[in-house]
Image 1 (cartoon, helix red, strand yellow):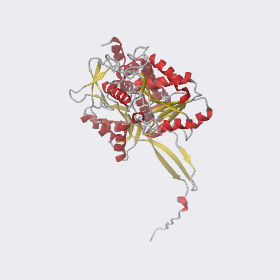
Image 2 (cartoon, helix red, strand yellow):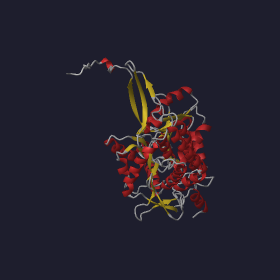
Image 3 (tube, helix red, strand yellow):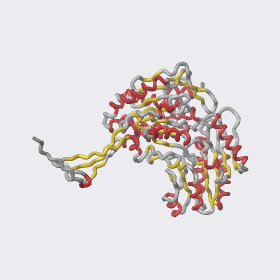
Image 4 (tube, rainbow, N blue to C red):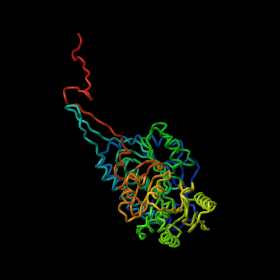
Length: 518
């Protein structure tokens, strides 16, 4: 094994060459897996197996749920600012291990090192945000229509929050949910993607160590699923106060149906088909690097990846010339090489899906301006692809999780907005312009129909201070910033009568003789 890999494993208390346990229960600790079954962890840049993980034994599922519920009684009794202190300490531990954990993310899912470390920084930022939020779980005092009555709203934890995360953000999305859920008084059970399970185990070890050293209850549990043996059971479990699911629209639709059948709460962060609009007044020095990062960052495997470029006809040629030049300079290679700008796709099926779309484009007669090929050799590498497309093609309306950017043109700005909104997804959008009126129109109710709309920055790379999520087939969920904490709590309205009378609302009169019968 590469010495760097050994160093990363050592710092994160993982054991190279040994089978790693993947199940942690709040009281029982790390549990053995399902017999002799192990799951390999592949480095997508080399194809090398870097670890073996024991998945969760289905017989331990009940233990996970019941222990999480039991420990929750202790956790929610701790004052919220004190719970925030636990998250602060986790954030400090993440600072200590940022470089090693960022490298592990790169090794496991193929993100370049800057993105791997950036994802850990996002967790650190989320810890800081959650610490502050722990002192701001505000209710309201309401005006009552009845004399000598007081009304108020307050918030209570839901209990156990289930978190299902995707491979492309194997650790950050956990923090969006877990840290806020925890300061709200919930315990959490995390089911990461099997393609990002090693990073999840490393984070869980950090969380356990911090909570144990500081005498906090173990609010976070972990389970590793194999072939979805536990996934449907988990999604359908009525003991979950909330299930937060991040993944594809197709799977999210099924999960949503399962939760809705039992009137269970769900928080959905699903697919994106994000567009950058560039009008004739745009500053191309801003637009070009934003488009390139949005289209090729994480090898096109972000939900916020720029998948459509909608450009004014009069500037299409100079913009595309600059983009082709930029694409030619993108260095593709091992994600831990500092010079690398794009790493591999996650696995061979992802490469096959990419190639299938390229073949479909060729059959349609599309003009491929750059890319469109697999890079031969070890690992799952492909070329970033820039292609002139028609908005009428069905594949332009689909989300392809690969670095393929479709170029569309417009004459009138209203047409650009129509093209932007003419897809089923509604996550992120951006407009590059120096025209104030167009910028304001794009952000108005007549503009972008996405949950995120930006001016003169790209579609990718949201800050945690703003609530993250989208509309339409993106699921409507909101995580991380502003008032997203309310997702993890239940609202309760209280009315206190401090008078000697019993007036009813809406002026209803209902008299009962107070004198007792003989």
